[in-house]
Length: 218
Image 1 (tube, rainbow, N blue to C red):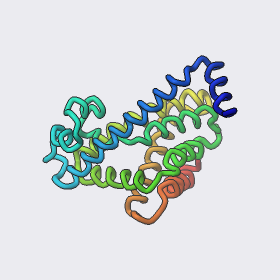
Image 2: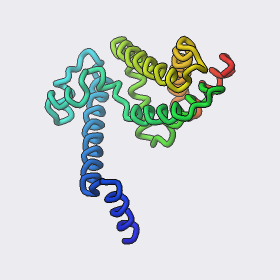
Image 3: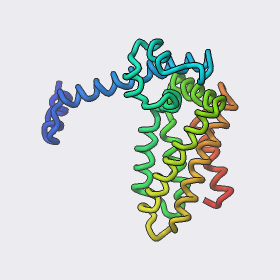
């Protein structure tokens, strides 16, 4: 009871309404659960029939949702596979890393962020990562869409690095650093896929960043 009272006091002091916070949390959980159900249905169909043979309408019917809901949640058919719940966590970890970046070892700090984003995944989440990766490997359209998303992420990271490092690194160096970071992450993820079901995803990502640091000198 005392803990609950302290929570109420803290929320009131910060101008937050506890009911509103709980409602937002519940809505977020419901939204994520609904997206996970739609994505699971989509992956089942894509694995069974192939990506090109399945329509958004097929996915909606299998998930018990309307096509408009699927488009509203995911935007495109490709995003039914590429959507990753870990993206928000990765964004947060990268923002945290950029906020206190070691100018002498920026790649190591970025590696810490990528590793942290994929720590503590449960077996179901790891299996989902594996299924998504396997479909991307098998479908050229998905691979092309993923490349476009990675390019966008790399450009955003390069911009963050330029702001964080300012005069310590040139614009070109920041762009190269962002490219190396994403390349190391992809190499670690692919190594984990090849080792499936053994191996640790965070450990593989860490090993890939360690290799990148050795090759580039950090």
